[in-house]
Image (cartoon, rainbow, N blue to C red; front, side, top):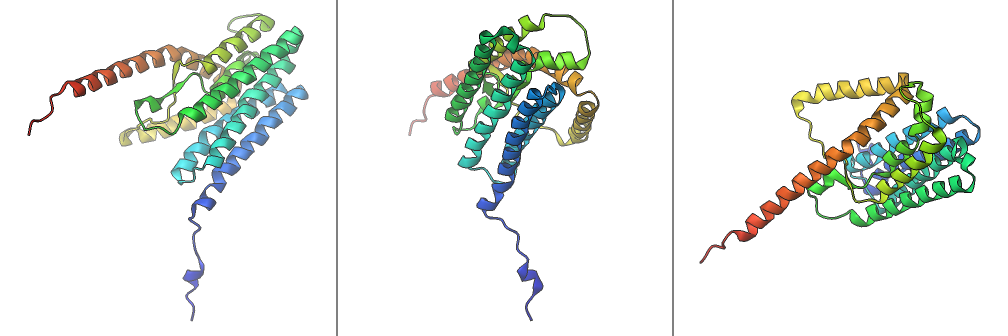
Length: 266
């Protein structure tokens, strides 16, 4: 009699493992395109939330792919395409429909410049990845596209948050912010990647509690959390530059010391 357990087999080949992260990436594309539709309909609060969801998916799909060993060249290229749509094209259209259209052709030109900078940033990222792991993996060159997409949406987010801590001219600050973020995207300023955070086992419970608290606040006060998070991210850039330079100096010192050591004489 045939053993029924032999008929049950877990699919473990790589072609099957790449399906889940690629599906998540495609869902991110759909959400990014949907954010444009929301902005076209004048539902800007939903468009911002859609971009935020796309950013969360973007942060998870690559990690899940590495966790289940389902990385692939197709997934890498698909992820870049998703980033251009969700964090390049979508934020540009959202902000153009919201306020940049009041600047006429200049507003459209600013939107185009931003999208081009996102594309250039992703092209450079794809070329530079794949090298030997090092301390540099803790940093990005320039601001990553998901962060850039959230940052250019900051005026809209602040307007929807109702914080009213300070007043500003939306038509003036929005194009200036677009230009600043576009420069940060293609710059070589080191920013934290948060890819290799080591969490001690003793603090895991506090990390999980913090994540639950963060998502709870996002559900209750989404625009307030995004606005404060964007400000914290900008303030963290000088610290990342200082940290990068410190690690770079230490790495060069260690390399010089190793080269100066005399070889053993046989």
